[in-house]
Length: 395
Image (cartoon, rainbow, N blue to C red; front, top):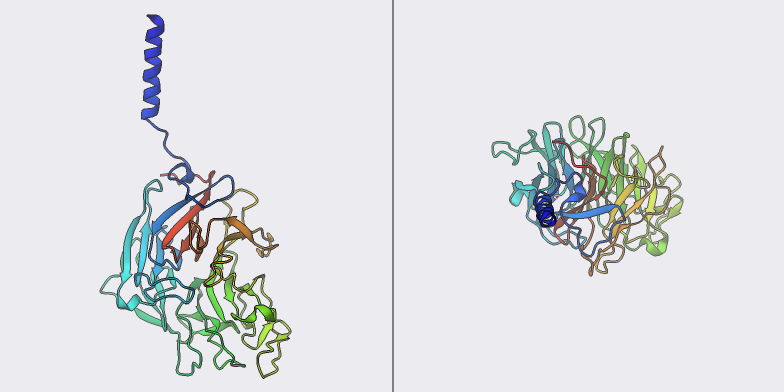
């Protein structure tokens, strides 16, 4: 009888144990990994949300995530999205985020870049940058706020139409930058240095922007970092693989030129042109990629991940158009002083491409809480990756 009572008591205790599961203390403690995607040991990957054609990610200071969803098909093959800007708010990381339509409609057909600067929200469309007043915590653009045109991104002098996929970045001094890519060109020298460049815009600057860096084909994604430096991912000429060209990450310095389309690289003129250009002053990138790797969004880890990934450089490769080769999420260790990658990037996660669980990697951005977010613009979803040691924020 004593043994039977002990067994009954033990069974009851076990039942009580299973009835009250422990509360999660780390981001990886809840949810399930994405089937078909492999991340390093000690990490997890989760789907954050489904979003039609998510292109650019931006975290507001309060943690809200803004996502642009252009209705216009992208050159890289992403389908038409929602002609909208979405806002995601996750007050409880163990539950799905709330989704709000921050702005939508025909005016956002070509929306791409988004940014929050103080009490102002900025966004790009094909031919301009606009701003509206912003209050932290707002979940939509008020109908009473008429957008103000901050910059014009086309002109009557353009001989080669700009791409619509502009992005925005904000320096530590508050300077606002916008990218202005172009399609393949054979015009040397360029008729307008703003076309194929990164511009500084806003108060005190030309309405068409002041040139920071020129001689680029498509500086699609730009980003500023806390160490007072800004960067761009430059996509070079589609036919330049056999000419020694490369896609690249550049650091933005006023007055730098990368020579497109006159120059393939520092000291190397474009042999396809009938003019002899001086390429001796062409600036050098901080990192290069083979043509058609198509580097998109990129960011640096901010000290919350374990070694060897602490402070490392991460980048999304959109891959070759049509073939899906090279698409993925890669990383590299960096020099602790310059933050430049010290070697070639390599896969951080696998499972991307036509037969993969995730189609293509677009924008890549670290959240303030330490998670690495990235967008799959062709698959229509946003994901995050975190080390299993990354703790949930305290309430």
